[in-house]
Length: 181
Length: 232
Image 1: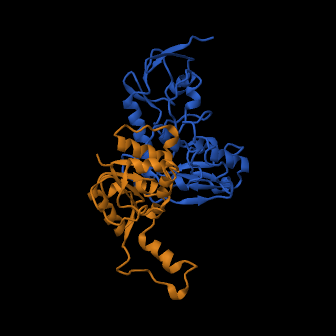
Image 2: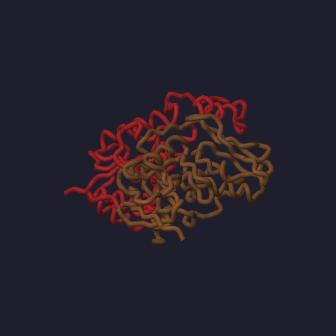
Image 3: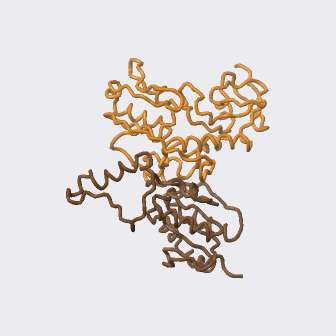
């Protein structure tokens, strides 16, 4: 039987969840025995090459590209997991959700004291992904099957969830594994 | 000595003194009923309903309801626990609770309750309401995190009995209001008391944030209520 295939992506996140994933230390050797990686920043594979069993999503959706990548993952992954506070609830990027987008852009690109007068311009190039009106948790865009909170979720939680999924057993959630910070 | 009152919690025979609330009576028997708006030493108001129990089939707030002889109390049944979980989730989506950026994280009772119930994601959509932050000489008032438990209103008074905090507006627009003149007269100790009594990170003393390292905070290793349960 072939190994389960996993893929990962970082949307509007800081890559902290990916770093936490790599923080499984020597268990990374077990991981290689357990699964195969497809599209992921970890192996730098850009496109899905086969159907994926488990997709891990870090970060929420703050722009059109995030939405496109998330939908691409949903289409190609049997199970999709929101990893970290940003994917689960928008996280720190969602702190802009109570401020109108126009005000955010004006503050960053026009009114900020660090912007030189000649640089005052809100970027609107067609190659730059369009910002959404607010930051959306992943499950408000596509169906998400499981959620791992934390900023970042501890390596132990990610490992426990991944091995539980791969082995098809229930999650053993010890008290210290569920944290929001 | 008055006779003890007999009652049951989830089938367990319990005894307590007359005049105790259900919460106190359960606690005396080593049973934890989760509370949020209630704080020992303050007059209970029963506003958050997280302590809801079913007594002889009816919903009651354990922090305000006195225990009476023969009560059959349902505390840890799946239905009661699901109901409480839903209230906690509603409190999370109704405010802006960015735990990673909150200095109360790890010492927050709302968060600790969510940890105890192992809530991975709320079942309700996030509302991201627009709320503001007010600054006073000794503390900050973070409306994004306030759960309107009214603990600060009940606990913080001037020596001549004037309340520093009060409720403003009604229903969905309700918020905590501060008397600026009285707040300016608060001592460091009273500001600290206000911060400590706030279950969430809504009242924060200035210039003392993030003192306790991660791993040593109140709810890092032990669930809220475990001190009561260990006394069994």
